[in-house]
View 1 (spheres, rainbow, N blue to C red):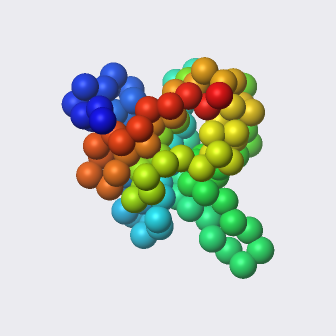
View 2: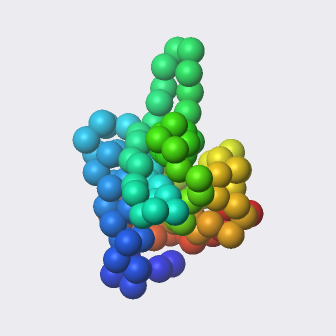
Length: 117
């Protein structure tokens, strides 16, 4: 386990943004991604009758819709113990297999650090 205080400031920022989205919207997950220019995209879980997206899938979709060409990093704040394969695939589709993906708990402590690959 990695403490959030040991993180690069930019990675700490996307965890904070993801945590805020989760709390603000009262959803199970919050996520944030950082694109190749340093812009961030923040989202929560989408759970409509006709559309279901995880927070990370939504954040990646927002980045794509805004013109991002690649990703530098991604973060998810959740109670879950692991990242879903579909979440890693969404990050990989835009950023490639080496993009780091951080999973943090609601307390912002990093539980896992993996790549999208």
